Amino acid sequence: MKPKPKSLIVCASGPHRNTRKIAETIATVLDAEVTTPDLIDPARIAEYDLVGFGSGIYMGKHHHQLLSFVASLPNVNSHRAFVFATSGFADSPLNRFSRSLTVPLNSKGFEISDGFSCRAKDTFFPFSPFGGIRKGHPDDADLQRARLFAEQLKTTQKSWNSIGDMQ
Image (cartoon, rainbow, N blue to C red; front, side):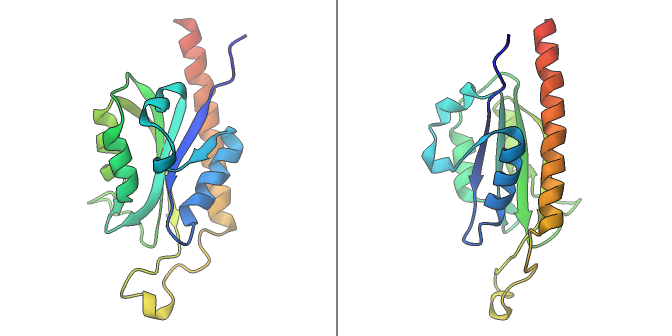
């Protein structure tokens, strides 16, 4: 019998812990480990069948710590990954903030199977004097969407594993 697929989530979360809430919700469904970029050796990524990369969005990009971690990763051969983010603003179709993460991951040989984002409390200036925007997010509905996203990943993961068994 083939061992259960191993999943890992690498998450850089700010002081509000918005992204960490999403990471932990996804991890519960996938039975995944959650870690931060500074606590895992980049070479260990190859030990996992599925790796999630996520952070809050800062000035239109993922957290610099996560981007630096991705830059330090060794090249892989068609390794399955997903990305996720929390942000005070919606993703723009003209300048998708996920590109700051998906482009370097693709260049390292990762196959991005899917992505997730939701709104989250943001206290970036000029909103900080007013307590920020998107207070209360991620909320229960956001967490439910994250669970559904993870269920979809889990289903897709099973089909990827089946295909691998057939080769």
